[in-house]
Amino acid sequence: MTILFIIAAAVILLFGFVVFFGAPYLPTMKRQTETALDMLDLKPGQILLELGCGDGRVLRAAAERGLNVVGYELNPILALFAWIYTLKYRKQVKVIWGNYWLMRWPVASGIFVFLLDNYMEKLDKKIVQEYGGNVKLVSYAFQIPDKKPLKEKDGLYLYKY
Image (cartoon, rainbow, N blue to C red; front, side):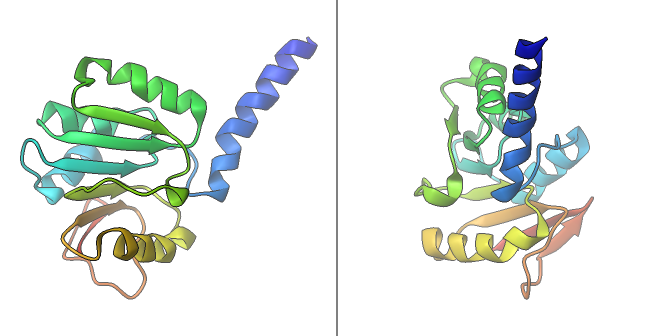
């Protein structure tokens, strides 16, 4: 009984503490995944960065389109799951377990995020710091403050830097 409690507490902590860095795990539905990839309009071989890749479903969908993908995930359970789920595309997909706020991001043509509203300004500053320009961002559910999206569809917002 004690071991089950410890395991349950550990899982709850792993899934709960990520809220302090971005967003809780909520899977991106297939429709929004496809819409996001369509909005980014990346060509095969280009790089997509996913901040908070969760279970890897966006990574896999992007790889199926021929994209190279780098996904960051803070939760080690989800990072492992995403890595396993995308093994078929291991030449195109890289899953990184860690806090993307503290890392230097690779050069990418597009970024996909599903962050909470209070992190969007921080994201905007990080994108400007990392890229300066020439990258597209699709955000699910939340907008960048004081920045007008180029396009909005299915709760997704497209920005160009």
